[in-house]
Each structure stands twice: as structure tokens, then as C-alpha cells.
Amino acid sequence: MKNLFILLSLGLSSAAALAGSAFTDAEDSVTYRQHSFQLIRHNFVDLGDMMRGKVPFDAKRAEKRADALATLTTLPWEAFEVPGADKVKSEAKAEIWKDLKDFKQKAEQFQADALALQTAAKSGDQATIKPAFGNFAKNCKACHDQYKAD
Image 1 (spheres, rainbow, N blue to C red):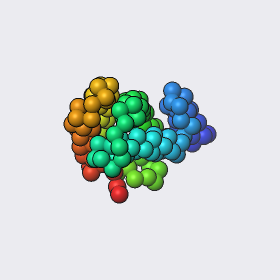
Image 2: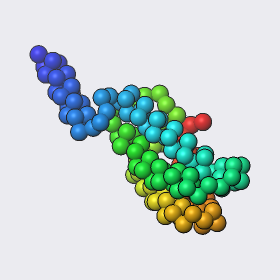
Image 3: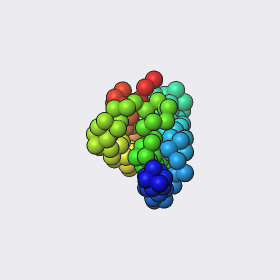
């Protein structure tokens, strides 16, 4: 009876934790964050190709990509805090959960960089956008280097 009570308590605790979440379980949260990062990557690469001259610069498209990044960079972070998300096989290193405070600070900086990029993109001037994109890219890479297994 005692074991049943413990199991029910754990189950209810887990359900309560997930009730305030958009995720059905830890695997769902990992899928969500992976898809969020894929969308970030798509917009990042397109904008990066314009900044490096691989494709012609298009001010409207650059602004569209920067607007998307300003929104998309807010999405994946809550999915790292779902109970059990650290146990699901992914490219996320265990260091994330060992130093979640640092990881969250990097996420906040990434979001701030995206907002600065969005502001720069509104100018329509590639010379203004390029340094903002460089900061965004640098901080993106720094986080990958520390927290993503390749």
C-alpha cells in the first residue's frame, strides 16, 4: 500500500508539473525544442548567406528573417526545464542541466541579440545589419560550443 501511495504521489507530481506546460512529456519537449532550433537555423542561414554575399542582399527578406529570429529565439528554452528532458537522447550536453543558470543567461543574451538584429534589419542597410548579425552568430556559436554535442 505504501508503494502504491508513493507511485501515485510521484505520478500526480509529474502530472502537476506538466499541467503548466505545453508539453505532454519529456520526449515531446525535446521534439519541440529541436523543431524550434531548426526554424532558427533556417532563418539564420538565409540571413547569413545574404551577409556573406552568397546570395544577393534583399532588405525585405533580411527584415523578415530578423523578425522571425526575434520570435523564434524565445521558444526553445522552456522545453529544457520539463522533468526528464535531460534524460531523452539528443544533442544537448549534460552541462546544460549542471549549470542551468549559465545556460539561461546565454539564452537571454541570444534573445537580446535577436532583438538588436531585428532593429538593425529595420534599417534596410546591409552595413548596419552585418555587425548585429555577427554578434548574434558569435553568441549562437558560443552556446553550441559549450552545450551542444555535434
